[in-house]
Amino acid sequence: MAVDISVTVNGKLCTGSVEPRQSLAGFLRDDLDLTGTHIGCEHGVCGSCTVLLDGASIRACLMFAVQANGAEITTVEGLGAPGAMSPLQQAFHRHHALQCGFCTPGMLTTAQAFLDENPAPTADEVREAISGNICRCTGYVPIVAAILDAAGVIAGKPETPPHHHSNAGHQP
Amino acid sequence: MKPRGFDYVAPTTLEGALEALSNGGDDARLLAGGQTLVPIMNFRLATPDLLIDLNGVKEFSGIALQPDGSLLIGAMTRHRMVEQSELVREHMPLLHAAMPLIAHVQIRNRGTIGGSLAHCDPAAEWPALCLALDAEITAVSQAGNRVIPIADFAQGILTTALEPGEILTQVRFPKQKAGRRYAIKEMARRHGDFALAGVACTVDFNEDKSVMASRIVAFGVEDTAVLLNGVSAAIRGRVLTEALLREVGDYAASAVAPRDDFHASEIYRRELVDVMLRRALAQAVAAPDLRRAA
Image 1 (spheres, each protein chain N blue to C red):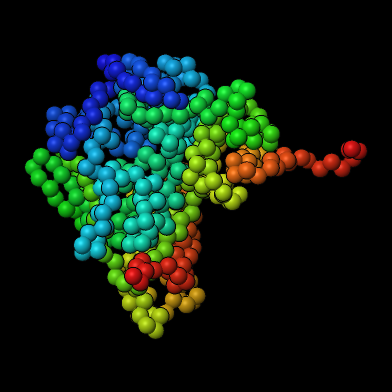
Image 2 (image 1 turned 120 degrees about the vertical axis):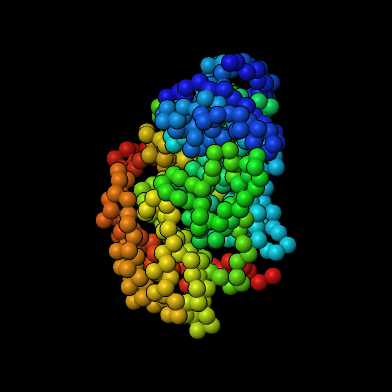
């Protein structure tokens, strides 16, 4: 039983014909070729599928595509583009806030929605904000640093340098 | 995993939803926020033939202060809306304090009070909050409406008083006595996880700082949230000294009948009840009150 849907994704009206059981994450990835949204756990705990629904961060694995009919979705692809990364994406790059990159789209959408609501957060508030996104690689420190840096840059402050391990033993 | 196939309807009115539920048969399920049902369907622990999506029924959503000072929250109201509501912060701040404990922001953006109550997980915050605040739940069917006092609502693990054909439409939180203090403390392995054990309470104090009355709820401990009536009786008329807190903490730890499961042993849950109770009561003494002066 296919249902016709039309969803605005990253500003563009997209249509599709989906089974009700198709998740929003599956629709974005398989029907629209927007594979930035990742599927990690399919039960809402890992955060790698996080997208924005009418500006609010949600789990795309816990919503059916049919439910998104008429809605506005922003995926990681909508935050910026190669060569035109958003301040947040640039900060992630600067701070090495990704290694394998699997959690990264979910981190970016989550962080973007967070900064949209809370433009001048403390480090503790940032940690709280990303507590629903699991990262297996970075240990979170560079992710928090990147988000704080991005908040500053968006507010017009200079970039903060990335954290380095001690330079003891390395002559400049 | 992917869920099994199902038929899907999205009514836009209460009547439409009741009609769909009535026609839907035994294997129809209501879809609220989906933050519990969809994982269960993705695990194929539930395989409904029909999903009745309530997200389009606008009349179910909203927060309203009534002339009598009670607060009405529609069943489809998202946790996030409660979290960010000035009305809630002002008039029912225990709810405001508790919302950040529910999972994570992405869950709270979709999850609903009605869905949480209808599911009635032993460790969920909403059933405990409703018990602490002596709330009433409205259920509607094609036969009419009824109001279910919270004391009668949770009937067992994941089991409520809701009958087939009924939809939970709203929750009413009665006006709380002036000066009433509140607290909620829970322990979870990671921030946002289900509580291994938690205590939510409201306490009324006399002028001399002795306890006038209290409602103390333990959640995550037994099959449903439970009122610790023995603790309330033990502290009535007494000042909450460290010694009294230790005494009631010990008492509560032995009085509860905790679940022993994969997440926490019975012994650990008893320990947690003791600690969470003492922390919650200490917090109720230290500060927040339920109604600020106008």
